[in-house]
Image (cartoon, rainbow, N blue to C red; front, side, top):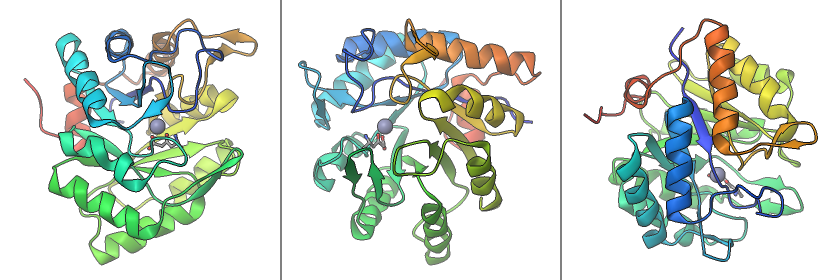
Length: 273
Ligand code: KMH
Ligand code: ZN
């Protein structure tokens, strides 16, 4: 089995300081969290930008500040969000891709998202995919429900996506696929040959699905975007605490954890030396 890639989804667009007092918001806070997570075993950080008041933004300059602050502290792969927050325009969401980060998310369809709808019009998705190709950005395909992986198969046939793809199965969003082992197994049965994948269990699904992901040879995403608790009724102290637990479990299961450069090799990204 390949070494384990742990992604730390540090901030998200929806989690608030009221829900999680240690939520990193400013570029410097995000960079400190990235360094702590990298030291704990993360090789990717999935980042969302916020205004100083905590509200979500896709402002390019804020993403630039985040990337620069992270780069000063550690060598972790920075993956920017193009999901942003529900209700943002596609043009707003796409802004950080023009900074040519190593990776960006690419949502593969629309989904009910709690009380909202996370809109991903097919025409906009194609624009996002094209922009990522233009800027040399590796997409991580965000899959919230089964039809989205069918769309990936269609896109591969049409040449809209080329080469081995990296998937993130986000399981447990109210409105999307359930955060259950069955749901993950179904997704894996549909995976195109040669793909890599990670699983992001939402809320209480983070720990069991992450552990299952390790056992099945996939990769794992944890962090405050998806879950603010360490265990039932106990908030995590920081993102790194969630990363460190996944790293410990993986090592116990005889699966070493990838460094950022080892993750780059697994994902087909150029090494940074
Ligand atoms: N905030 C969600 C509506 C992504 O980062 O690409 C979408 C999201 C996905 O977080
Ligand atoms: Zn996100």
